[in-house]
Length: 338
Ligand SMILES: O=P(O)(O)OC[C@@]1(O)O[C@H](CO)[C@@H](O)[C@@H]1O
View 1: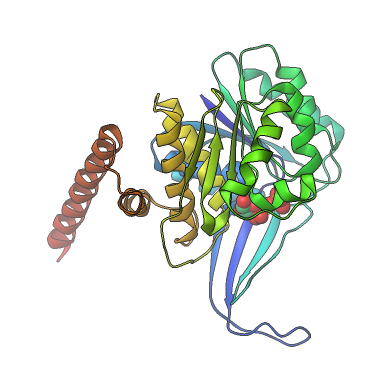
View 2: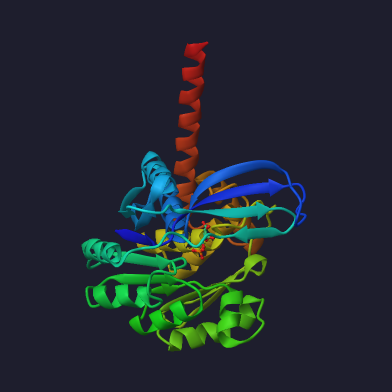
């Protein structure tokens, strides 16, 4: 089972402002509300790919209630500790000419609730994957991820860590199965300015030497790289799309990679699929739907001049057939109503 942990989930309120003039009232042309927080985004995409996961974390107040209800409605299993005070944050994403984000701080989390969550995490066991990702609310210790990993270490759990700076570096000594920083985060860690996957590869080696087993570094529109645990280097370009909203694109990459690796697919194919998932989310309102992912997978393989591998092509075919059956059933239903 894949478990995702979101200590500071959010409702992502995406606005499309027509202007962004500081000190004035600006108007938005449309708005959307999505369940967010990195782990929740990963569970959402896994669910879209029919890969079961359990989303764990801490929720609070009316926004937390809404978030948990939406997860349930989508069929995403969850196991959240609920706080008696405060509310799950609402993160503002201003999707104008330049994307601007204002992320909330999140509720204050009392120690007994942290202990309750740690206790619940004991369900994670041998053969499971635990994804630790996203910011840590101020009221939690900075080494929270390492604490969790030390507590659960030695049980045969695969850890995935997607966290910035010190949080990531501290986690490396526990030899996470996968880390996925982006080029900017890696640049900040090593004090360099790196854009292209080729420029990032030496730093992937450093991160692997420091303890990570598989290292993915995403480089936005420049593509992404994987230095796998066998020492093989893989670089994948990005399919061209019209950018809609990049929120959750990195999380979608993690989900896509895990979905394929869980099914026993080789690392290079998993990276290509991961890249397609990230790009598909960047081309979507919210986390990508399967049909968009499939379109991007086709475009990416075409760009790379390669044939889509059999297992992925078969899954795409099954999905097309399923969607056609749903559309036919809906049309028949509509016909009966008329
Ligand atoms: O404030 P954090 O925890 O660093 O980031 C939270 C967040 O920006 O990340 C997700 C996208 O990765 C969004 O769903 C969410 O709003």
